[in-house]
Length: 167
Image (cartoon, rainbow, N blue to C red):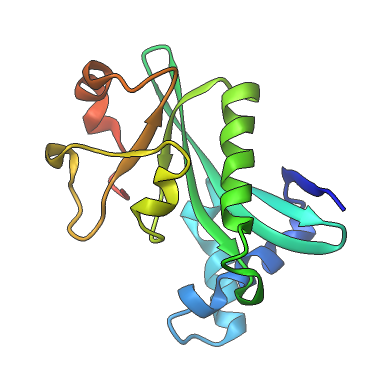
């Protein structure tokens, strides 16, 4: 059966939140966790996409739109999740690959920024690069980006201050 990548429907959002419950709940009960997710400004400001195989939800992520860098459309990818029993089977990589392809083809995105607690190696497999040391603004976090058609240090230098502080 083929994987289907698409924008999530409203009725699927709680199931997407619950894929990360074990990692992101901070010990909260399920209903409190879901309530916080539903009220999250970060989650409300993005668009959820998912990867489904038949009736099984495999993985999901959140896409954010940011101000353009000149003529370059900028998008953020984050909250990559898969249910615990489906992790380490490639579904996270697959949903990111679909998102990168979709955002670059359909939305003409030329700068992609990942929100990541996963680690840099995960995103390096998708063409993302760590920012230079002077672009590291949050201790313990390694901001990354992917630029198309190619990495352009001069563009990054000009717009570096516009990278959201979340990174």
